[in-house]
Length: 96
Image (cartoon, rainbow, N blue to C red):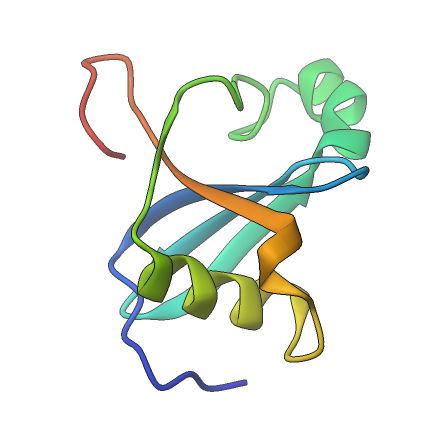
């Protein structure tokens, strides 16, 4: 899938209303990895790269970026008014 807006490299949390959060990683404007809250037990048990995710560590992104992230991760028919997108913050307090 392609979008009209370039998605900055980084990590994002999507918070769809009434659903599990989604974590997505972008590089070169492309989706390169993702997982969902429902899979966290498995990631923690495996101790893999997703095991330390904290959806409370984020800062809301502007609407153009949010729209592009939602379209790329959730599809073109998703009502973006029902999804909050935050850039993940690393342990140093900067956007990841």
